[in-house]
Image (cartoon, rainbow, N blue to C red; front, side, top):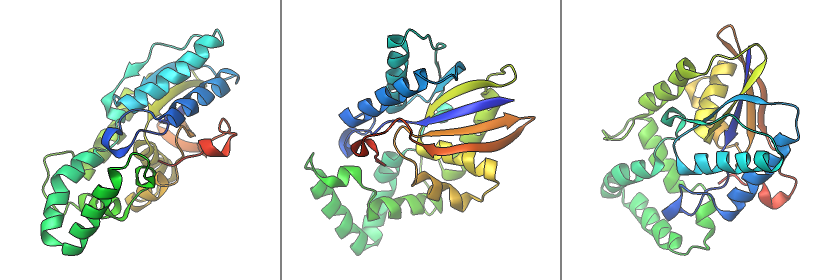
Length: 238
């Protein structure tokens, strides 16, 4: 039996520099590390996706452990835990949707103009264009050269084959993103694919989800926990 501790990355940067942590994201990672270091749980292995925002979150936690005089295992970087490529979807799908749908084109151009301001709230929101493009990708409406939704699911579920073997009751830390975490939660709950994105939309930055892996079966222990985020301004979704 192993306990899998999933951690979503901290708040990322603006839309034009998303794959890095914002100042808030770095604070969330630091708070997460300080909270974990004060708990009795110790990790026998640490895994992280290859995205910068995932690795920076893991590094923020490791720094908090080091300040507490606690050593974490050397992390294994595995791109199998990466998030799907939303900006690749934008690049390949948005031009086709703009050509086909004048209303989408108008909304898309408006959002692009708003996003030029670094202080715009659009950098912290999931927009109507985001949803339209995501559903086009989920429905496989267009042939794209980036990873498809079925291939993404296969990749994330296939990570089970690379989970380190641990002694009974040991814990593994996994630094990833909201959707890979939700794929695993949906598997534990035996929920259909349509639930994955609903779960994803609820996950806070730096939130903790714990699954128990026993005899090949997954059980949900904790979902979307944020005991380390006492300050309301640190509870962010994007």
